[in-house]
Amino acid sequence: MKKILKLAFSYSAIEGFQKGLFFFITPLLTYYITPEEYGNISIIFIFIAFFQIIFAFSLESTIMRYYVRLKNEKLKKDFLGTVILISIFSIVFWITVLSIVGPFFFKIIFSNLSFYPYIFIAILIVSFKMINILYISFLKVVQNIKEFAIFYNFYFLSQTSFVLYFVIFFNFKKDLLYLNGMLYSNILFAVIALYKLNKKINLTINKKIIKLIFNYSISIIPLRVVNIINSSIDRFLLLNIIGGGVVGVYYLGLQIGSIAQIIMLAINSAYVPIFFKLYEKNKNRLEFKEIYSIINKLVFIAGIVEVLLLFFYPLLFNIINSSYIEAKNIVPIFILYYIFGIVYFINTNALSISALLNRKKVFGIIYGIVVNIIFSLLLIKYLGAIGVAIGSLLGLLVSILYFIFLVKKYTDFRFNNAIYILYILILFFINNFIDSIILKLLFSSMIIITYFKLILNLKFKSLLLKMKI
Image (cartoon, rainbow, N blue to C red; front, top):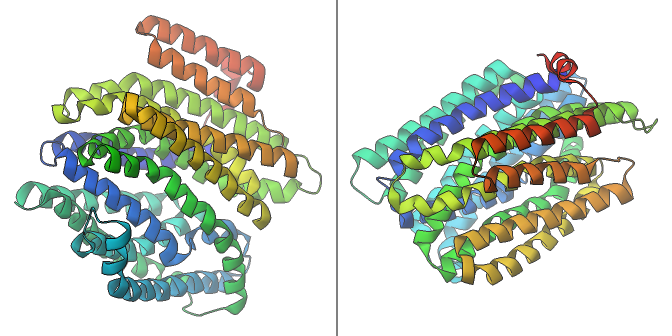
């Protein structure tokens, strides 16, 4: 547990630094980028996320899954070399294909943004970003915190610097300038990543490794595709029903709320390698007490993060351009959305123990998408962007409930999911609907103490000793 907390804290601090920097530059960017332009950037980010999957077949996930299991150093180098070579071949293939058919294809399915230059820039960004993602995945799996911190933070600082420079000092379409800033940064750091990986890889194609990684990566591609659809359908609905300006405001609220996602992902990044190690160690005995103990404490941390974010986020809107003020009502919904990520990860990690269960996860996301669309269409007429955010939250909850069902039916894990969900929900309602700061602190403390009694069964002193890093 100490190791997970240490890694989670390190990842959170590193990625939290980036989000903190984002908080500083966001108010500035709102004075240069209009809501309509910010909406365009938001839509391009959806294409970037989609291209990342089809360009490299989610091969970065295989590094997290298999690298630690390889004992032979030569095999590890062959593994990384095979993954990188396949990724590069795939990237070249997709750039060629999309350059030829893209202008016609995207004009049919999406006419709001032109292929040249918007979508083509997204293709170039992904082509170089994938190399950076592979290197970052490698640093995480070997738990090289120092190297990860240096590379990841300078990567983000570079991207931020390029974006600010182009947006502030050039008089052109700000959305295009923003995307060009991202492109230049990814080109620079892709070169650095390849240089860093040079001594850690053998540039070879190992057929056994190809079979291993594709058996796993292909099984999660449908899940990732439907995840992107699920996370982007809200913006497409807003774009087509209300307009691009609302998409920009909505996306700003989503981005501010996503600091919770950064922290939950950091916790999960630290937890996943240890989860699989403990699972492999105990699967024959069906004894998972260590895993349960870790998870109970991670949910406790998620609740604390939730309280802090709901308390402090309104301060940011004192310095944001007034044209984005409606985003203030969207932020708390997405804080709750991303805090629920801890329950999502607990159950989806448990389902990742087999390729068959991985494929079953797709249906959970599809059910969530259906619920998301239905409630978004019903609520958008009355609540606008807030209604769409609520629809997204309800869709996520349906997916989580389905994953809980799968875990209970097909695995030997028995998590305290009902208590986790209730704990997170009660803290949300306390901190979002009670105005008095004193009452918020009082009731939040009561819920946290109750969680200790029911789940952790620890006194404050013993908890602090156990969590000491």
